[in-house]
Image 1 (cartoon, rainbow, N blue to C red):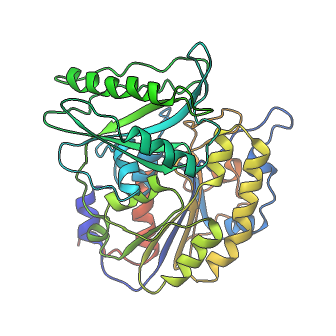
Image 2 (image 1 turned 180 degrees about the vertical axis):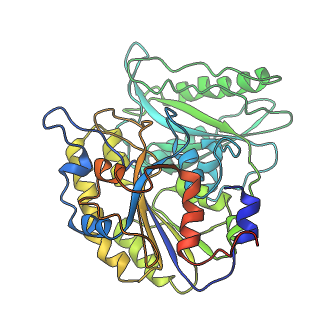
Image 3 (image 1 turned 135 degrees about the vertical axis):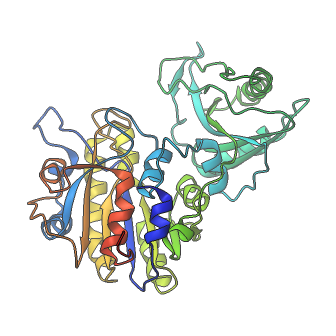
Amino acid sequence: MDLTLIKQLAIPSSSKIVLLVADGLGGLPREADGRSELEVASLPNLDTLAARSLCGLIDMVGPGIIPGSGPGHLALFGYDPFTYQIGRGVLEACGIDLDLRPGDVASRGNFCTLDEEGRITDRRAGRIATETCERLCRQLDQIRIEGVEVVVRPVKEHRFVVVFRGEGLSDALADSDPQATGERPLAVKGVGPGAERTAELVNQFVDQARTVLKEEKPANMILLRGFAVPPKLPALPELLRLRAAAITCYPMYRGLAKLVGMDALPFCADLDDELKTLSANYDQYDFFYVHFKGTDRAGEDGDFDAKVAALEELDRRIPDFLALHPDVFIVTGDHSTPAVLKGHSWHPVPLLLSSRWSRATGAGRFTERECAQGPLATMRAVELIPLAMANALRFKKFGA
């Protein structure tokens, strides 16, 4: 739906919407028994809720397109990810409250492990402790490059942000991260007019970082991806005429919420902490975005059983969400991360929407196969917000 039309239809209300995003929710069957993670997991609360909810599948971007977390979330928030594109670097920077200036180029960084031949053996350096990341970032922040200011800040575990600040910089840069083990880090290349100088400056930083980290184990190198300048997006609270808050444990998702105008509540340690934050702020906002990371992390690690366990952890807390009596309660994901693929995939994501006004699907379970039989079939993710607003009685009639 067009954002201008959404703004025209939105009306104030006292109703509450809770959007629970289980990152990487969708999966694929494993060879052993032909069942996906959702089908193997014991999910009594989600299954019961699905039976009385509107269910379906949502396509985050388009058929066959593998969505990153940024495009996936933007679509969930109602923004067409083809029209509004945000680089990973900006998301990470905003997530840690790092102020970006016009013209800054931000990049997401990973500490990684290289073998003696310079090939990547672990893109995440064993998910080093955040304290180690902080120490290494302090060292990298001392790097000086003529013609540009470099700012390096830790994020969490192996993740960090690097910002290049100066005149005439371009974000039209290819990643240095090949996103595969067994490969060597790539040289950063300019992929647009006037980007060659910026690529050269970035590569100087990478070369110096290699020297700084050469004696470190396991984090002896860096990978950069998602070069981006700060974007301008319409503010979601103004479009929907409501107060919106984000509750997250990871900076990138907090950054996404801030970029669309949500209030980013303080970082949470885990799902229990997120629920406490939701309850404590429930009277202050109308729309809550709550992010759960465990499902995606296990999927990317290729750990099928760990993803099943994460789903079961989430299921145990569903009654706590429902105890707040949201007028609209949505459970879905920002993309699929099947453990059998060890990464994001193009497969549509299960969705359930529970409200007094939703037509119950009667799904037997909250799984990919059951949701595919729902009346929504497979819809575009950008259509979710209008559906939520309608079920919250926050839209007026369109036309005469």
